[in-house]
Length: 482
Image (tube, rainbow, N blue to C red; front, side, top):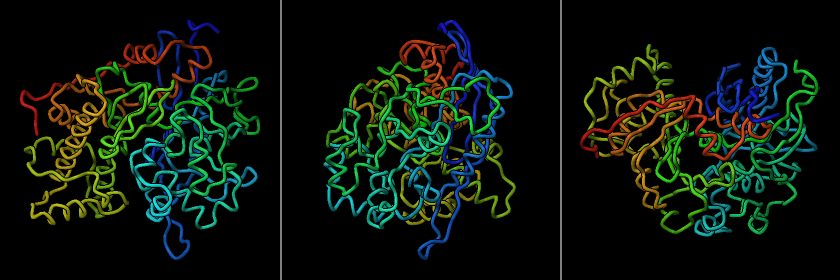
């Protein structure tokens, strides 16, 4: 099919708090999204080994995915492709092709022990030089080391990261897509499994699946799924399976002069580079080098993100308060800018639960007054996030040498006008907000290019996004806020 044709693909986009199946129509001058299904991603606690362990309900998510694909099939039986992206680091263990229990959630408290096990064998400095990842206690290599120590790996003959596991269930093919595999900390700079490091951690090399690039045709949708697609059904295509990798594909930016913030449950703040930066200064700043589509590097820092808002609202509603994000943002915008902020990346804010009380405790420990109302708390969360974003943008520029003239915010945070304006004010540069569904768009574009609906490099794909999804511009205050 020529690149002038228009056709359909389905983007399965699984976030840490919700999932969606999007039907995309793509052509040389066409890029349109229709939501086929949206569903919550609610973790479950299971009593095991004397504690309540936090797991993903991945089989439940898969059921929702199939329902969404069924809806797509009814509107476009001749769909060309399906691709899956999801959050990073978490995985399922397999035995003879079957999942051995629901994957652990990265917010489960078990990960601290894995950190100790790994650092006893390989120093943090060497890990950074090898894998290029910022330190996060839930990175895959820490989880794998813990599974090795507890004997969980003895009963497994393979593992698949979350998007690869969904891809396997759709296609019957078990592979690891490189952008998400890079978040394990176990890839070399060249993008292959780091056999030496895997051996030093005592892990079996046979557990690790074959690697593929984004844009690879993995297989075809299994006929046994009984979805009403025409003929042999659509291809299953590997996309940037780390959701941020797909999101960055759809950031309509010039990477030589811009930073991006992929803002959802997490805020991923960084720049796009051609190669890794693994200096000691970079490690000290806790910047990560993750794989991007077409061999690019996503050089970024994780900030806690909109989790702080969503979990706070969940707590207020649990207390019986009738609040919503929209009403609280409107009230918060009318309040004066707070002078005292908190650190969104404090580890106490990682676990689910009563975040408003934990934030209040953070202020109390420093002899500072905490916000007295939900709206006041929302305003201080927004401003604290914006300052953390701005600090990360400045660090990205200093460490990479990329001059930041604009900041692009994509994802759910692009809808949050108060956050976008606060970020522009604190960075001192324009913020371009949108597209909101950047992850699904990037997912769809990589599929469309793989099946011949569009052609070109990332800049060509981004130009198509810009023509069809005009961003909202936020100019900074005349005097940058600090």
